[in-house]
Image: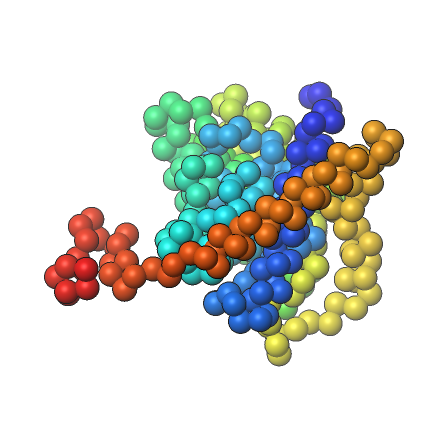
Length: 331
């Protein structure tokens, strides 16, 4: 497999920085009361999100999880409707009714995220099965966390994918914690990737999930194998979330002390930026990307705040095959 090109490094930095800036502003504005509902960020996990998504083709499928903003951004989604969705506005990607944990963007193959831990795994299997039945040649990438690897849905999904030899890549974002429970106390194996053997499935283990290239290469091998008809792969990426499980968790906070300090020194955004600067010998293009992302975030916020809220009648859309709001006199 060829190494990444310089343009791919730049693109990786662009998408990672978008995630970082998008979520930092979302976190800040959520704390101000501007964004309703729960908010889970993937700060610190940008390299594994983008590295994995960039291993896909544009029309491949992707299934995320409750820590959901990074996944569609990693697959190059437009940030305006994503931000509008967080603000519960009508122009949101789900019409303002999904919120932070329920983002779907079919235009880039993002089949959606939900707040139910592990629920995306069987959805990914269904997407991969459908792709096979329709001879689409698409691969499905499914993100899930270390906590989800203990769910029954995980084992059922991997078993079916292996039996049917489906083109799906299961990517475990092992950030070491499930809410306040450390993975070391909740997972029976040292590496979640070791569980692949139970399903006669190949596996990939990325021990440094803060390195964009390592994640890309491992995921690309899995994607290529799936597209070649060689079936599913379980990929585990060791990474870390810098923030708490969710913004404003209050009494659920966990003192991660020196552990967090150590991981903060392995900031994936800074690691990639430094690598590119050393490769090219200057920071001009990097600074242009940073200015671009700042403008994109401001534009996304302006778009969200200037958008209208959904109408009462909109609550009845996407529930039944025919709109029933007229029956209740809400149109």
